[in-house]
Length: 127
Image 1 (cartoon, rainbow, N blue to C red):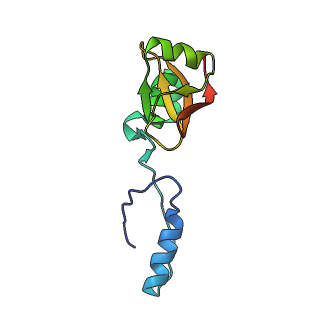
Image 2: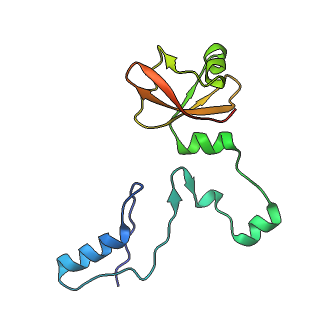
């Protein structure tokens, strides 16, 4: 038996890693246990058992979830209004590949946008 800790990105096949490691050593390999300690921005510190969920009925706000899951940008009031209307944004650089969470000046999550050249386009608007 070999205990291994792997820190990886989304899309990594840990089971395949065990198989390939065993193959390279000429002994075969498989997992006997897999424990995720983090998914995206969520670690064990916010994990709950089913019993705790039933007791607490707590939730993580959409604002907090969006900030944890995506790069984020805080907008001024005028730009936030454009986002509420689902408009494309010019003159803004989101500085990221893939979806970016955009927030109004009060910290409310408004939408996911993607940069496409000089224009940022809405992927999903939540208000």
